Amino acid sequence: MNRFNACTVTAELEGVPWIGTWSESQLPGINPTGGWVILGLKCRDWSSSPTARVLTAFSWGHHQARLLLLPLLVASSPLAGHAQTPPTMDAGTGGGDAGTGAVVAAPPKPWVCPLEQQVTVLPKVLKKQLGAATRFAEVKKLLEPLLLETRWDMYSSCKEDDPVSVVLDVFRARIVSAETEDVVLQARGKMCGQEQFITGAVLHPLAEKNAYCSINMPFLPGKPEQSTSYDPTKIVFAFENLTDPVRKNIRVELVDCPRFCHSELSYWEAQDGSLVKIFGIEWGSGGDYSGSSSSSVSVTAEGKEFPRKLRLKESFESCGSMVTLPSGEIAHSSACDEASSEAIYCYQRNGSQLTGTFNECGRRNSTYD
Image 1 (cartoon, rainbow, N blue to C red):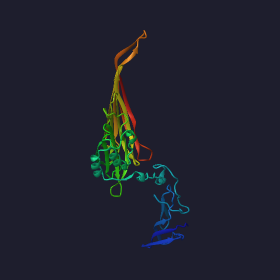
Image 2 (image 1 turned 120 degrees about the vertical axis):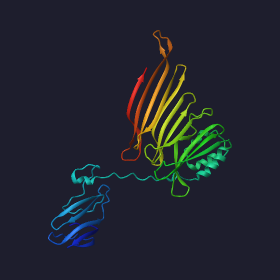
Image 3 (image 1 turned 180 degrees about the vertical axis):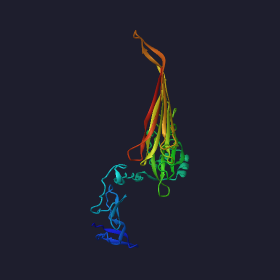
Image 4 (image 1 turned 60 degrees about the horizontal axis):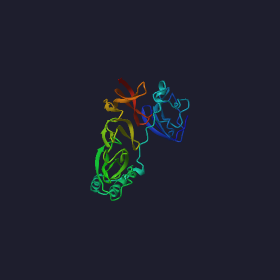
């Protein structure tokens, strides 16, 4: 005999269906020799425990009682003499009938845009305004409301009336979610005459009209650190399906060659309201009076299932070096060394979360003299 706050009982009495409700009263006794057959029982006042989720339901015949365990709900007081709520266990474990009590990990909480990232903007209007701006102060005033993490301090020498030439590129892609198309902005041009300028943001639409969540693009810093007026840094990005068949990842290529060339290739993914680097590699090439070196890198996505894998092919060649002869004399050697490698990178999720990164999961090396 057990007490529930509210119970609904479905029964038959000699073939006649009947539905009744008990509230704050004990369940009736069952006489195995009588004519009642209780077909179903549902009770409210469920346990608030997130790990105890089993509904106790009953079906009695004339001569015996049988206990059924239905996943996902639990009565606050199990009937005496019958099976109790099973202990917490990892999903997929537990033997026999107890396996139905496996606990399913709670899904991650939906991301909500913080107030400090919410902006109001009309992309088409902003594009026209930036195209018409001719002064440094005008461009800064137009872009600051987007909450970009632009390194304005890199332009500390600029005066308000210094000439500028900036254009705004507007793209559309599903970056943050598969359900909504985002607006991707890239502002690029020249500041204060010849200073390179490149910045941008992913604008995720909110419920209100012209309202967006502004997500910074870390690979567009404003003025690249190694950029010069005579040799600006080249930054190119594109959209690619890598971890999801609908949501896009951003592939970024950077080349900076003031003297020695420095190159970077990276992939970025929207995770919890920000763009996170999920893969990256850097390499360089150049030479001096003693010799030269060069690197070659190729990264391609492969496989039809998502997330896809990345195949990295890299090689390095070094020619010329300074060597010490037996007499102690320093001489130049023109010999070349070469090495290459090929590796596979797999997308690995962080525990039970939907976020992850690419990690090496296979490699083959070779060296040549």
